[in-house]
Length: 508
Image (cartoon, rainbow, N blue to C red; front, side):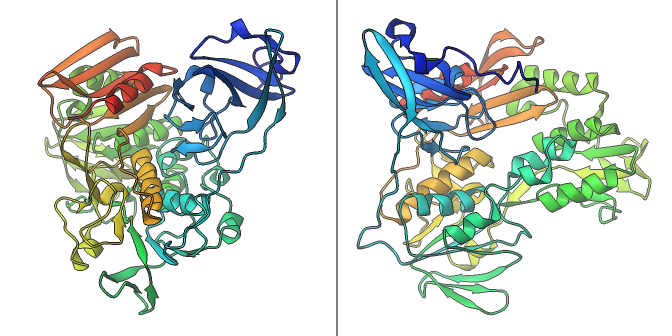
């Protein structure tokens, strides 16, 4: 980034701006010294906080004001205007909060405000909490427990070989080579020590006893708990064809998986991606960025049609084809050899690297063995509590009652997992918070992001606003006249935020 591009935007707020320059129920981006600052005017009050989202540095001034919060246009992180706290994932870290002065028709921002948001534990707070799972939901829960003032014993058990990291980036920038390994951790190593989180990596749980309130590890160790969060996530569906176990064949779920694919990609020239899922297509884009020849094989008529419909499916396909990806749709892989794959059509494709992206399945074994109610996921109530009191579930395994659709949903989205982890944390402390967030995810295809809010497994009507071919559109998915989901492809997506807000106001 050049010095010119790095210069703060907008007026110098220390010198003051006219009150009339800040629209009512609106925002103005300026700066104090070299720091970008957002001034918001809402409800007759003025607020000032840092103007840059702490998730991926999105511009908050282009986002949406909702009450005393502002939401980022990129990935829907939400910040308090009162304190700067990150009140909803995917952002975890707060932005700075600034003092606002008003006199003689002008608004001045000069000094940062000190804020204290930590809550103290109450007398009936559980003393021992165990989190099973070190992914999005587990990490967000642990962080929120400490942020909420929980000072009891906190143990996080993870089968992964490293502390929680930014998993969505494994198929995006990290795999493409534009994000370094040191960008990936959710928090630095010292965070867990400073917050007294007993993080146990490379550790498997063999059983949970809901009545005795114990977790048994694979080595036989028992850990007692008063409250437990089950956040075991999902695992890739394995391809069952001859040769699927060869060393150059990989799935992508973890950072270790991404590193193994990168190691092969550095020597490979041709790759075959099996499956036109979001993960499969993001892998295709990333491998193309590494200058590999990439072929995608899938039984679908067009990529992502079941999720996005034909119009956006065709748009995504053309985007990949313009970048050199070759599709073999309506086809399947029947065998894999050392340097090639064989398709059902009889054609063979050269392949030094094969990545399988045919879906994931929730890891439900522990929940089933513990006697929890399970039906295509772990059944939870509005507070994310399972059928066993004191045991909660969040993330890819949780099937919760969705207020908007009136159905029970289980979705595999990063932001959903984080927000459920945060809600479960509060409820383990007795806060009684219902999980009511609208599902949201984003997917990146080269320079084009697709944002999706809501959830529509089936729909009977779509409304397209804008121009799909130009990559500037909003698609609404309706069933019986009700909008269940909205997909959009835009640079800074205020439409997606407004759709999210509209869904929050509705009930089934």
